[in-house]
Image 1: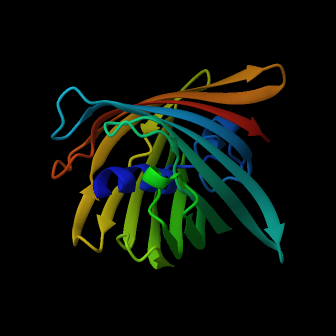
Image 2: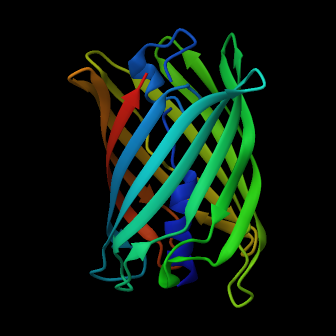
Length: 255
């Protein structure tokens, strides 16, 4: 049960948030750049068609993510809120999982941007889908721009700050590689929301996914929207974590 709850909760921490059109980027590239200053309303559905160690089990998670850029003291910042809702799971549980909030201060450079900030875990999920632990920790990353697209790396860390004494502490570090190749006519292909998660309580990686996402930038009226289809395979098979995960993303952008 610990691995399933942790997977649901950490999925909210790990995903990439596209957020603004600046720094000379076109909108297609900026839509895939988590350091861009673009307001984004992200609606996602993740279907797990297979779990390690479980026969004939599947699950589904909806997720809403809001990314808002703002300036403070002459610096550029991005605030992000993630709210996951489990619609089905191998344990027949459904409901809200824990929320996460993330704030990144970004700094422009000739090659792209880097950012420093913090991520927090808020134990507001339903009884069977919460860690019942508060978490807070540092975050850092960079995105480099190239003629063909973008590439970079982000690191987020949740340090346990207390909570229900009957629940396991949450101390994890996350590495998220990011790349996106810009194609013609609004198409792009790149990494999925794949994030490598190290659990300091278990002293091992507990998520090792590899995946791709195909995206298309379209316009509804005057509103740009990025649509994405993704697939991930998780190579960590010690436990009952997700094995095959399919994703669909609708990202409404406000340049």
